[in-house]
Length: 493
Image (cartoon, rainbow, N blue to C red; front, side, top):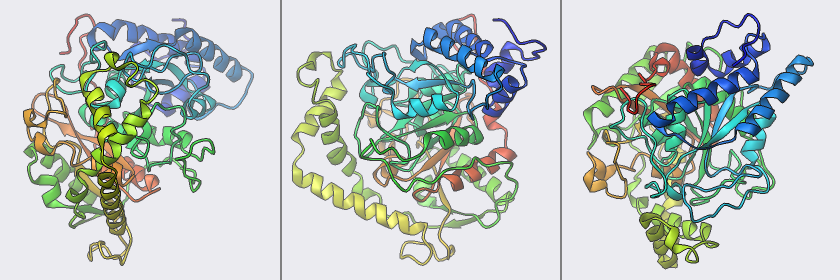
């Protein structure tokens, strides 16, 4: 790697720079985009035997892109908000000329004809796409037999989260600065929690789904994963916006301004449902939520106890709505390529094909009821708004998972997981409602693995969640911790 003159960045430094620092180093000519790109490709190659995060690298494309960005800078052109920032894409994002595999072999190797909207937005902002990272098959719960699952850089014996497993591992290990994840039942929040990251599941329709291979369209969300809430905010400001070619895209999609230093959260109210957050939950998970609330109180926020609207009545709605959408997503390749599908995804498609329309109708009713009652919690004077919050909640807090899961955790077999009987209760209800959620690291357990929590907000209230997140991370340093990687071995220490 040829460094810019007077560069004082070491290899290790570059891996952990945040977006603004990385961009500034290039603007000040302490680094070039070529430097950054070569550094990350070298790091990915060295750590591939240890972590196995990437499924494909776009080396030539990324290197040409880096040269172009350096030339623009040298001509004095304005730098984009993500200038020279290395990004990894979950392998369901279309990139022109590259196949979109979605974690399976059943889709074949035909290349995409155009970029996904999110890829165009990232590149227009100056980001450099390094390649695609691994994911579970079809974005469900299991990795396809052709995929060797990535390993958690904090503890190889612990879960990486699903389905954006490669996205979580790549960012946590310093293989990229940002990654995209998708979330249909928890798949931005799970890997963000498991890998100690900040991850944003935006309001449904806030970020375009065009060019993203679907799991279940009405439940799918795509959003950024990074090490800090501020970096998430910078990426989200680029990603969000109306896309007239995406039927799910919201036309009411206001711009987002990333938060600056947040030291005072007076006037913000956070709701806490004790039963929801602590019943049938690992004590360490519950403690992380309690400790986060204390930080928010120190920053001036008000915490009120409230009762979450009954989510159990729509617990089965995900299956009766999501599985038919999964079957629809795979109509071109199932059953014609049935033999190439893994067991669980094939079974989900079969269920989707057999769902009774009356069950779907009941599921939509339950979904709508929960969504409207939840919305009332954020609206002052509504029937579900706690009386202690006359102007409504700004956010509610919850764990992401109820227990600490091993590397082999399979949510399709919750009976085999610690506290697994409620393994999706903190995630899938908020896919049904389409609500935004910000996950952050709230500490580490006795085995050195991260513990995450999430803040859920009202529709289009990502700016509030990101402000809360920036405030929390201004008072804590969990997001600054780095995993202890054994660079020359095939296991994590």
